Image (cartoon, rainbow, N blue to C red; front, side, top):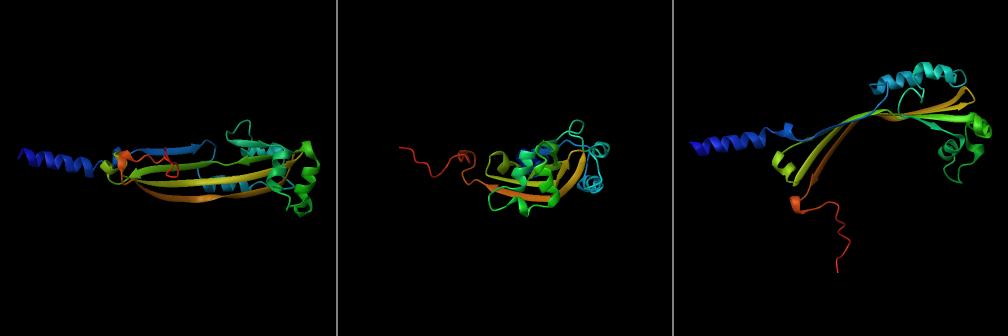
Length: 188
């Protein structure tokens, strides 16, 4: 009878303890709580009409809203002319004029995101590093706003509205196998 109780307890611990596996939530703090919310705010920006003051009212203020990167004209040059195969003449006219203005040319790079990673599967295999399964979900928005003086002249958006990544890492040697060891190195 005692053996049955121990066996049942062990099975319930092994099978029902996936809640004991680590969960990670990674958030880049911002005022936007979803991809669609961020995109709607970004779509209110109209190049040639929106001013820097209006950007602040919309929440695109790097001094008030965290995780908005300020770009100077050198940063913007590196973005639009990453190598010699792209010339100034190839750029959008508003970007060309902005880069010619040098100091007056600035930009904001926004990249809010929320991702959740949850490990799942067999607790014993996970704890002893034989097999780890991870499911990552969330979203990531990336936006670039270019201003010439106080006027928005260009904007560009991209991102991942729906992230779903599944990772299944197997280590046949379990805790004896260190994934950071480079198999190409030899010890003499």
